[in-house]
Image 1: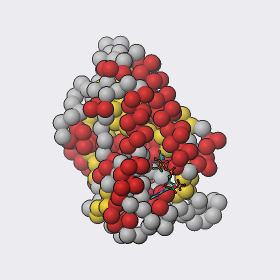
Image 2 (image 1 turned 30 degrees about the horizontal axis):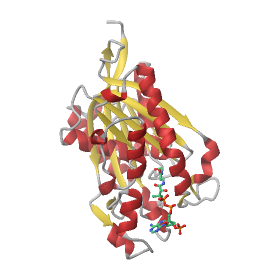
Image 3 (image 1 turned 180 degrees about the vertical axis):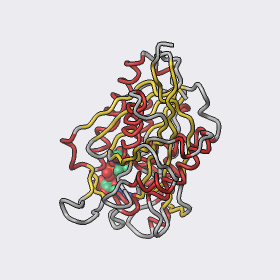
Image 4 (image 1 turned 60 degrees about the horizontal axis):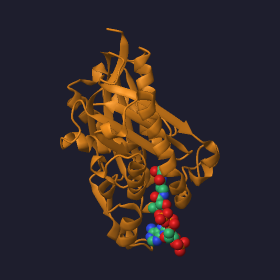
Amino acid sequence: MTGVIRSVIAGCGSYLPERVLTNQELAARVDTSDEWIVARSGIRERRIAAEGETTSQLAIRAAERALKAAGLTADAVDLIVLATATPDLTFPATATRVQAELGIRKGFAFDLQAVCSGFVYALATADNFIRLGQASCALVIGAETFSRILDWTDRTTCVLFGDGAGALVLKAAPGRGDNSDRGILATKLHADGRQHDLLYVDGGPSATQTTGHLRMSGREVFRHAVGNLAGAIGEVLAVTGIAAADIDWLVPHQANLRILEATAKRVDIAREKVVVTIERHGNTSAASVPLALAEAVGDGRIRPGHLVLMEAMGGGFTWGACLARW
Ligand code: UT7
C-alpha cells in the first residue's frame, strides 16, 4: 500500500419538504406562465418548506438518510460541513444544530457559504480534511430554504428556486493513488468576486441588519455559466487524465435545463448520462447536486465503481467541479 488516503462515498440521502408549488400557482401570483418558465428554465414545480420548517430540519432528515444508506450511526461522524446560503440564524452555524440533533459529541462542524456552488466547495473542503488525516468520517450537506429570501413579487427570480436538502457520508479509506481508487479523485474550485453584483442578496447583518432578498441579472449569469462550468470540468478531467467518454454520470447543479445541457454538450458528455431533476426541484442552490445524486443512486442509475462528475456555479461568482468514483 502506498498509503494515500481517499474520501470514499459511503452513503447518500436527501429530503424534500412536502409542499409542491407549481408553475400554474405562480402564474396566479405574478405575471408569468407555465410555458415561459418551462421554456426558459425547464422547471415545472418546486418544493417549499412549511412555516417554521428550517434549513437545519431539512439537513437533519437528509443526513439521517445518508447515514442509514452508509450503514453507520451518527457517532462515527467527526466532521460536518454544511453548505447553505440560508442558515437558520446568522450564527451559530446551522451545522452545529445538526450536530447536536444527531447526537454527535465529537469532531467539528461548520457552515460553508458559496451559494449554489456550496456543495462542490463543501465536498472539496471535507475531502481535504480527510486526506490530511484531520477527519475520518464526514457528513457533507447541502441544505437550503431559498423560499425565505425570495422576493415573491419579482417574476424574474421567484419562479426559479426551491427548498430541499441532500447529504453524503465520506469515509477515509486507503487507496492506491490512481484512478482505479474509489472516492474523490479530483476537485477544482474557482471564484471571481468582480461578478459580486450579478447575483446577490440585498441584505445582511453588517450591511443592512435585515435578511434581504435575492437579486439576479439572470441573462448575465447565464452568459458566464457554460464557459465557467465547462472549464472546471476540463480541469478535473485533465488532472486525472480521465476522458469525458469514460464518465458514467454528470450530476450538474440544477439552475437551468439549457445551461446544464449546453455544458454537457460543450464537454462532450452524452445527454443520457446527465442526471436532471430541475423540472421537479427547481434551483435548490447548495442542495441541488446532492438531491440529484440521491435520486440517481436511489433508482439504481449510479452504482459502485461508476465515475461521477459534479459541477456547480453560483453567486460570487463561485464555481467548481468534483470527480469521484462511486
Ligand atoms: O444557480 C445560480 C446560478 N443561476 C443561474 O445559473 C441562472 C442563470 N440564468 C438563467 O437561468 C436565465 O437567464 C433565466 C431563466 C433567469 C432567464 O432566461 P433568459 O432566457 O435569460 O430570459 P431573459 O432574462 O433574457 O428574459 C427574457 C424576457 C424579458 O422580457 P424582455 O426584456 O425581453 O421584454 C423578461 O422581462 O422574459 C421576461 N421575463 C419573464 N416573462 C415571464 C423574465 N422573467 C419572466 C417570467 N415570466 N417569470
